[in-house]
Image (cartoon, rainbow over all chains, first blue to last red; front, top):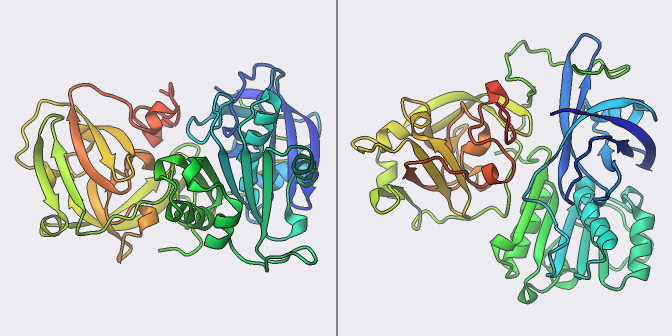
Amino acid sequence: MWRIGTAVALQDETPTARTIRFEVPDWPGHVAGQHVDVRLTAADGYSAVRSYSIASAPNASRLFEITVERLPAGEVSPYLTQDVMVGDRLELRGPIGGWFVWRKEQAEPIQLIAGGSGIVPLMAMIRSRLSTGNAAPFRLLYSVREPKAVWYGKELQSLSEHDPSISITYAYTRATPKDWPRPPGRIDAALIANAAWPSSIGPTCYVCGPTSFVETAAALLTASGNSPDRIRTERFGPTGDRK
Amino acid sequence: MAITSRGFSGRRGTTDAKLPPGQYLTTDFPVLSAGPTPRVPLDQWEFTISDGSQVLRRWNWKSFRELPTETITVDIHCVTRWSKLGTTWEGVSLDTLFAGVNTDAEYTMVHSYGDYTTNVPLQDLLNRQAWIAFRFDDDDLAPEHGGPARLLVPHLYLWKSAKWVRGITLMQEDQPGFWESLGYNIYGDPWREQRYSGDE
């Protein structure tokens, strides 16, 4: 069933990424990690639908947020990141998905690994943990092209400074901040060994990002001793190297 | 009763290809999996058909590859809304695998390495509608796409085409598999847009 949501706030995370807050009067609530379908319809009836992860924590209000990255050849993302204005009404369906979710009842250590815009559902998990007072220790490994491509940067920085039970490690693939100890590069076994929970404590791992990133990260996690059934993945985008 | 999105015209493809409702064309081959990609050595691979209490048929990689194969070109439709047209696969027809299996079961659960499951009615697997595919576009099927072998049942959404397939269990009554237990449709016909639970 399609619901009608009103865009009530917009915020740019980077020059190509925008967070949209929707108010949906009959929103049934969501769990961190779920996504929502957004449908755009042209004047002649043509419509296009895409799925976006929810970025905000579950809450009792009828509000939630998505963050959308503009894809140059995209059909829906340019509209959502450039054309939508506060007050616009859009059609939404959801929340959807029951696998790549973190529930507030989970007490085990959590390892989050994000590649680029894959941060969105993981941010919802971090925010959900905070808002529910859950004490499970979280670690986030966030792989991103360069410092200015980080989403939710100030919020993450504040968290890492004030909440000792959340540890955040950035991995830059193209350009690093000045004097950064690790040269730019993709995530590797050494980084997993240094920044991720040891597999011996049995974390549940959530990995989200482009397919090639998720393949790499999930393989590194299993190689370092994590059981495949404790690793949940969500992939998006093209395969990269098609085969 | 769709509401119109002010200023939206879409980016419609140049093709006139008929797609199921709500799908868009891609020329890439995206990947959707719930967990890490299992690596299944061919010398340990096996495929079985069971009735739930006993194994009715069993193949190892060698005996499986001695079966007659077919090359098929089909359109595939993922519930995440991409469709890919004219994909070419090589595989063994389920008609070949089920030859001589007598059963009154109407449903099946498809099992994969990595513990994925998905349910498919038996009649959807027979009569040249489904294959165990091991080659895609003249290459061995890549692990992230389900290699060494996956089910291919292209008239249903692609989550039914279980990657890393290792067996089929006959069932008297329909039961949900992995995604079907997590909010996705029990049957998954893309032409009726049966994406989520309750879609009819």
